[in-house]
Length: 120
Image (cartoon, rainbow, N blue to C red):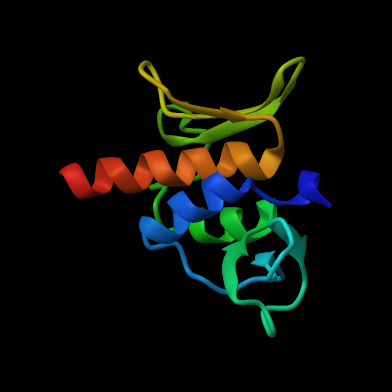
């Protein structure tokens, strides 16, 4: 299941950066047990939303000023390589994000875009 979602550390970073705290999966910390991914948010003393790749991608659309008509200067590209997943946005100086899973790479892209938005 961990391949469908982001790591606990990334979930915490997303939460701190203001990513919406609702979703299908959660990192849950039950008393006397290690953190684990689950589908319920009830009954856990500690919990952090754990978004899927699709849930993250759904939140990216308002951040990316994409244009129709094949404008490669403002388009999102990505794929899977030997070391994991990658995404880049824009040319000639693309914004690049990568991760072991698609969800992790998209989360890194969301965090980077969020940081750049806040610094402008």
